[in-house]
Amino acid sequence: MKILVICSENYSAGNSPLAMAVSGIVYGYRQQGAQVLGFSPFFNQFTDEKDYEPSQKFTEKLGNREYRVLKKLPNENDLLIRYDDYFGRAGIYSNPNERAYDDNHLRFSFLASAALNYCAETNFKPDAIHVHDWSGIAGALTKTVYKGYFENTPVLLTVHSIRYDCQFDPSDIYKIGLPAEGFDIDGYEFWGKVSMLKVAILYSDKVVLTSASYLFFLLAADLPGGMRDFLESQRKKLFSIQSGIDRKKWYAHKEENFKQQKKDALRAELHLAADSSMLVYTQLDSYSGNPAQVISTIMANLLNMNLQLIIGIPENDDNYPYFVTIQEEHSDKIALLPLNKNDDDFYNRLVASDVFLSINTNEPSLSLFLKAAAAGSIPLYNKRSQRPFIYTISFDPSSEELAGKTNAFVSEDGSPELILEQIRYAESIFHENKTLWGKIVENARSTEVSWEDAAKNYLLLLNTPGL
Image 1 (spheres, rainbow, N blue to C red):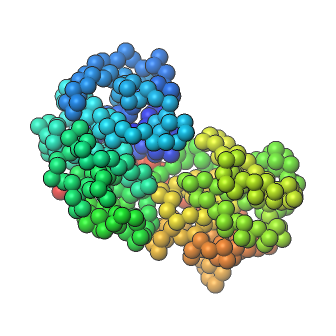
Image 2 (tube, helix red, strand yellow; image 1 turned 90 degrees about the horizontal axis):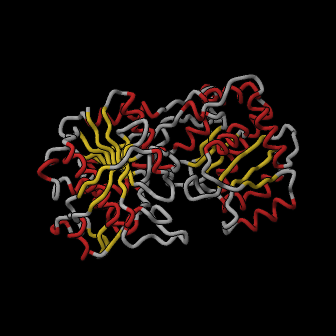
Image 3 (tube, rainbow, N blue to C red; image 1 turned 90 degrees about the vertical axis):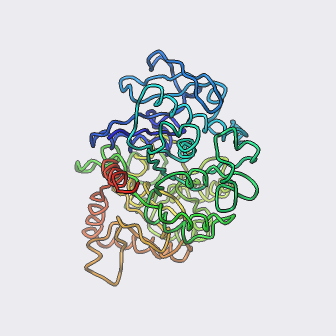
């Protein structure tokens, strides 16, 4: 099977949640024998041209703009679109001051156009096109500008996070190849603007959300601007496929005392006492959940428990001064760490901790929980929706049978009282029933969802009649 993949970030570099997810899917496709031709932008700020073969020049049809295509070495099927006017900037989606670029709709419709044009020019006829978030405009272009070549080619869209939408003035509709008749409330209109997210969903044949609970959450949540009603209108094309993880990267070694060595090293780094306390790690960021309010509410309780709390938090976070004050007063119980995107750092934090605490309602893929479980850090979190995460079995104090199958601690919602209840269950088992705790850790480490598993499910969906 031949698949065209388009991503707004350099997935072959894999240095962001989106890029790593797309990289994993592409890897899984190729492991299953699919031929994948993948496109992403060449960002001058983050990419070295010496790692690529000399480029070829092409002219796409949407705006008749000339661009170059660079081939990634050693895999020549990972291609980058070079067009410095759009991708030679300081950031991917925004400038260093976090102001989104006003022409993102033009930039990423160009990316899709350039990728489709390359296929037509080189006679690569994919059996399916798989697009992700910002590149979702490709579905519309296959039915307009590039209809002659891709008229019957199915388009699969993965929405990694519904938070990321680009809205622009309808006067630019013609610039990105949209049919004008789609600009209405049932189409891609959103409060007088054009919604690129609605465009992507509307013109794709199938739409995948990155976990079953995330899909259920979106269909039950009170999303702004009538977006939930729009999703309901597209319900027949909505599916869920659980995002995977790289088990080789996240799985904790089973060597004797490995986890204890990592725990001792982290405690020494943070000047925490090397005692028998349960070590809890949490992060305060928009991706993994921002549990600052809940933690501050139950802080007095935590300080009276036999645990140590490590908080990953950026210094520019509004809550940083508060936690600094608490840490200074209770340096034996609380430690702060800066946040970064280094997977090695995150792995070391997870493998050293006993519990990974995350409080959120809409983290899309739940991959953080799979990473924590693989590293032997027990996930402790609130339900993301009324549909449970199918890969976790929550601790139930009323069932001895289920206790032996537990691999997570899950509260019914994100309220401080219920989160604290789960922390108390974890603390009690950790200190009073080492046999059960060891079983819970092994259950968590056995929770396996790889990118090959995800790719198999994508291929099953792509082979579904009617796609």
